Length: 139
Image (cartoon, rainbow, N blue to C red; front, side, top):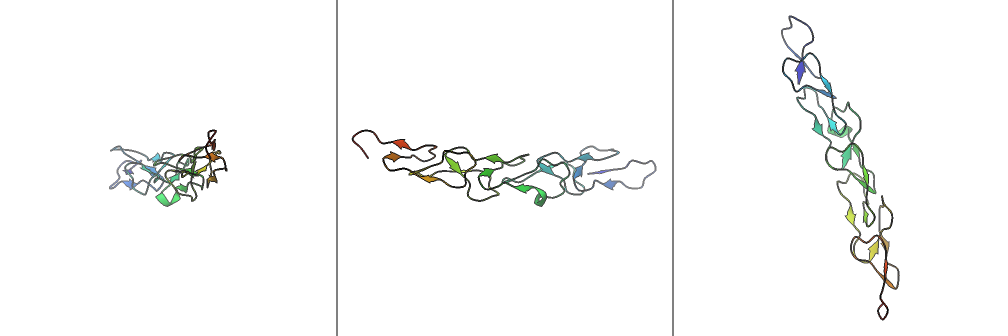
């Protein structure tokens, strides 16, 4: 988490926020990796928390990671958000996973923030991406 780049120094300098150093005897600091943040004096990058992401290389605090948008999710250390799959939704931002549509509803599009009611004459199992027609003789 520190370095010195000059001879005859009496102490080392802490790496600034957004950088880190994991080696001893270093003469500089390394840029923080995408999906991570590095507080001042960091000896290693720390991952953006679940529900957040970043593709920047200079974050100094977890609060600088970006919340995933509604209809999307981000796992720990993500460099980008991911749209919810068909049959799933995320009503709020900052989530680490999407929720399957409950039975009786469906969602045919990725990146959804809600589910649609199943149409009359059709049924929808949990996590359905389409409404399925009822068999002849049933409703």
